[in-house]
Image (cartoon, rainbow, N blue to C red):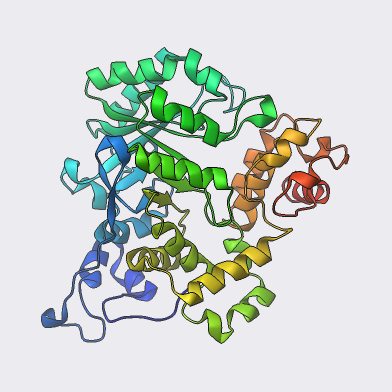
Length: 407
């Protein structure tokens, strides 16, 4: 995935390691072709977009607290100013590159989970959510979190209508100045008789105090997601795409795929850079959060996000990835789940496969897989799910493969 082209203001991983994280900014500001003051040039900043009704101007690429700490100084220098899951940082562990900025220069998000179980089986509890945020504010010493995000979201439109605990907890915290804005990350819940993410988000835009949402979105996704993005833009509702890089990680380690990518029509692009440009080119999308574990990934994503517009090589690269993913990589649309007589969380199982094969994080994938009430072994091989898969995956066989990998 690495684009080996370099301009004179880009510094290499070797330089980054040599000067250390705290010195990265200084190197980024200098031309490595000739290290002198006259050649110094600022790092090009990421574009910023209005995050819906929050009014926040956030970077088009969103940072996350689980990023490798070594890459965060460069991200800050490049203009990343919104940090997902920031409650994971304490006053001691929050990166200095963030802390040394004025508090109003960056935006911290806290994600609030259900209690008494996982996102499918836990419940909403106003008091426990309230106390969780209060404790996180005290532990982090940040004064407040800019965005209170209900993690994983509502199970259904009906739950959103009748369960006010999340909103009440937010209202109490906002009155105390501990949070400012309300958002959610929304999953599909048709495996437990709930609704699809796009139906829940569409309801929330007009019938709740929520100001923004984060949800699965990738190249080749369903038209319902495009409709939600257009409606969100019209209603000044912020949107962040997640789980965008399906297949990119495994393609990067596939020798046959890489041999195809070496063809002249793909020159200067890769599935990863093309996907970032595709996301940035969507005028209805606010931002994207993309898993970033190393320096090369960050450099590639920053360069693509700053460029934004797609070339024919990028379109060819996305087409190559889409063909590669057919029959292989789940798009997480969850259509198959509605057809499963065993109500298996197929999309969740295949999301965990992504963690293992695309993020190369096998330990996380296995840990998540173990939390399932029903894993891949519960499949009865009826095949009812197969006609619903727009990615043409043999789901029956795939579930067996995933269980061998993660079980």
